[in-house]
Length: 294
Image 1 (cartoon, rainbow, N blue to C red):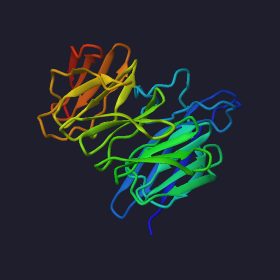
Image 2 (image 1 turned 90 degrees about the horizontal axis):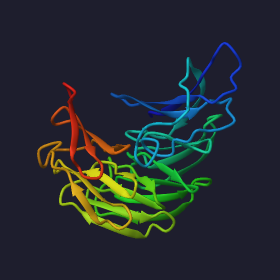
Image 3 (image 1 turned 180 degrees about the horizontal axis):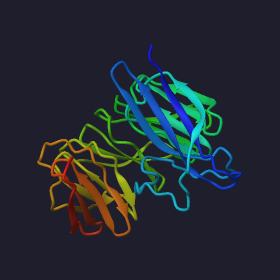
């Protein structure tokens, strides 16, 4: 039987540590033929304040940026925790001193980020490949069975679930404006009430959507396998724009997700080996950079 181990990393300096440090969790997924390493942010075990990293990319715009958090100078292993299954694509998130992660055998774990002690785990009849999101004492995670789950962050008890018509294997939930945004393999984006799971609105895009939506300033951005980026009102689903540039040929797999910062939306093109910056309000291309490789 194969197990997965989470190793917590703490900083060490040549003087007592009394400030906050941005540290790392390394997930070693041990498999007969594969070793997967995943990194996510974790505060210093000596810290008195935790810097949250509550969803994929840190925030609803997926900036991947935490203001004022210094990087570690060095590290040692602080603790390890054994999981029942592989954390295949699921990254860990940290909120209020608790680490949350999903596994391919259908478990969601809550682990004390300081000690590595398991707080709870909840089991479901699906694989979890997506990264959880945490908000308002709830953990949101989507399963390959097409279901979106909301769990009590303190106990792991299910609060609600919503069923889409397709598998959810790549798109992770984004939480913003008291809503959960998620894309499904049924070619739809869904927007759900954070407390009840009731659908606020949805759109069928005619092409599969494997990207994680980004939400910023009243708009939601995502890309489909048609090879274009779409922008809708996050509150009611009103159409705003579709990009005039292609990030891939139609019907090609698009898994790169948009990031919003300032007045721009950024996205990478695996198909064309480029990274693009677009005006987030008009879709006008500001620049494109050739990365030279995929």
